[in-house]
Length: 262
Image 1 (tube, one colour):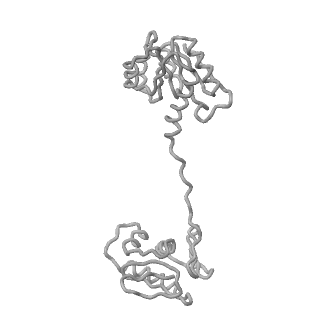
Image 2: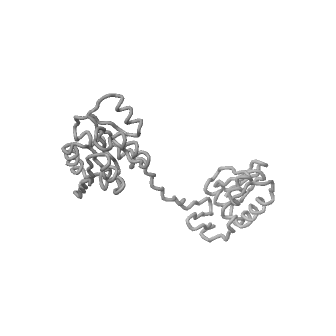
Image 3: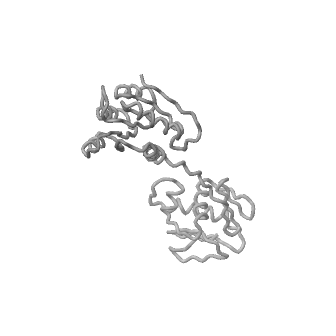
């Protein structure tokens, strides 16, 4: 039965806290040495002295990374790696005294993520484990969702749009608008000076594909114009083909390319 050692000392960084590393090697002094260094850096460790023992631990515990020796009794490292890859996606570092390129290539082809040759510096192994965990878990985490940004109040002439409350004020007095009228006016006021086609206005307000019906748009624009008609020294001009909103003391129609001045 594998020996489980849990380190609860504080001081581990984000990559080590609550991370469990499985150490698999038939040389007890090697796994014990790595265990000492890993626990010093805040890791939890599981120890197995052969492949069968390691496989049993994998099925009993949540393992975040495995360090596996190649030459072991009962079930060798390559066989364990092949079995492991059929069921698990955790990163694996091969640890071996064999330094032939063919062994490294075979291990990587079977699914190993890194290869360390004996003799080794324990600190290097710890650094490789930290880097592997960082790449596997931290970098693959989705970014936290951005908090929705509510536009600030927008004022154009005597009109003030409050997107947070879905209201429009004229000289400090609320204007009663329908939902469609509010959508149209807010689109114009949040992009002053920009020209919008009837298609853009329709699809924004109705959330449907535009169809050739100029009257639908013009009726709602006429209602908006009527509700703001009492603004002194200012007027709305809605073009037949395009509309925009800008601040101006007066407006002038120029045919199909006129803008809507607020």
